[in-house]
Image (tube, rainbow, N blue to C red):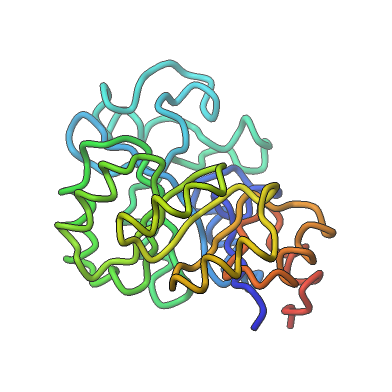
Length: 235
C-alpha cells in the first residue's frame, strides 16, 4: 500500500498557505487529503492559520486570539505570496469543510489548547469526524478531545521517535512525526501497536521514496504533485 499524500497547508509550494486557493489546488491535483492549522478568534471562530499572529502571512499586526473574525477576514493573506493571489483570506474551518468534505482526508492541527469544545462541536455538526485526523503537539489538548470525541482519530505531533511509547500510553491511534528520524524499524514498531505513522514535512523526492518503502501511512508535503509523481500515484 502506498502512503496517503497529504498537502501541507494545502498546495503551499505553489499557493499561499492555509487558504482556500491552496486547498482547492491540492484537491484538484489529486492529493489524498489536506493538512491545516486552527486557532480560535476572540469571538470563538475557528480560523485557519499556522501562526498565532497574522503578521507573517498578511503583513499586518495582531494575535488571532485577540481579534474578531471580521477583522481577520478583512486582511489579505495572498499578496505576500504572489500578487496573483491578492484578496485571498484566512478562511474559517467551516469553509474548508465546505470545500473538502467528501473529497479527501482532513488533518486538522489544533495549535493551542482551549478550543477543544469548539472543534468537537463543529466536527460533530458537520459530520466530519470520520474524515478527520486531529493532531496537536499538546497532549492535554488531545486527551480533552478524546473525551469529547471518543470516536475521533487523534495523533500526537512530535519530532522524537521515543514519543511512540507516550502515544501508546495515551491510547492514541496515530503519531505525526518529523520525517528525519523515521526508520523502517520505527514504522514496524508503531504498526505492531496498531499506531499509524504520518510523516511531515517531506519535500525531497529521495525522502518521499524512502518513507514509502518504510511503510509509513501518510506523507505530508508542500508539493503534493511532486509526491504523486514520485510515488506513481498520479493520473
